[in-house]
Length: 307
Image (tube, rainbow, N blue to C red; front, side, top):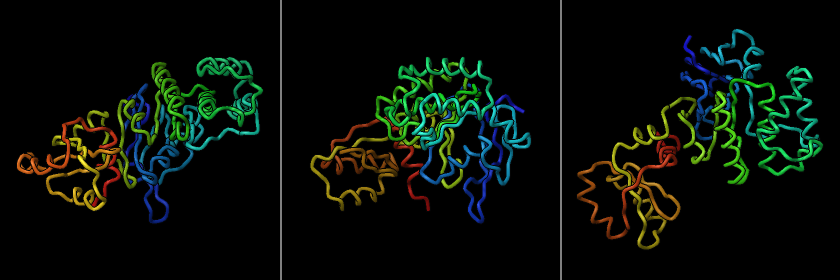
């Protein structure tokens, strides 16, 4: 078996006639920050639940930190930390009480627990009284305490399912600095997010759609493979009507034309046709070449309608 932190082969999860995950295969390297992107319902959380030993797959092979489903769910659970997209600490308990409870569930001895707790408080720069009730913490600090809880048993792999949803940009930046520190410590971090600026910080990204992985590469690699032809920014010289925007999307010269704030990003379908048609568009837009963003990749690959 390869020295992968995560090794998935032909994984499927089926509910009745519906495939939530449909024969996917991929590997994650030790110490890698690995991103998992997809629209809601694409199968990301279902996959993570299997990898954490929380859900038995319908088919396929899964090895996580050297353990498989066949070794028993506890073999995997002891090696992974999981932070769900919903805040899972008890709001009416104190920070200390929450961590005491998790330590008991993990069967950590007192000396190990207290040492590890202090290490994690130092790691997240927690400076509040340990008797602080969780509901009284700011949103960003709640997420950091939740991360500390997931790390309490010192797992090899940390699964973070939309960990920064609903927190401020400053808190998101702080959280990602912690993620990078974990990777530097040799931890493998598996993260889902809807924030493209966060996804840019992953070393590799798997794109999921309808239960399948449709692309897997570095952020730059995904941009290159998704857009074979040049991408341009179009800034209207005067405001467009809704009908005009719809008409632009149907222009044969574009393979991709999507709003981006007050401007538009577009990829041409044929360079020769573009040279012929460009003067017509320059009468209505300021046009400049740009590098495609990861958001452009996501819209084109994941959100676009595929017939």
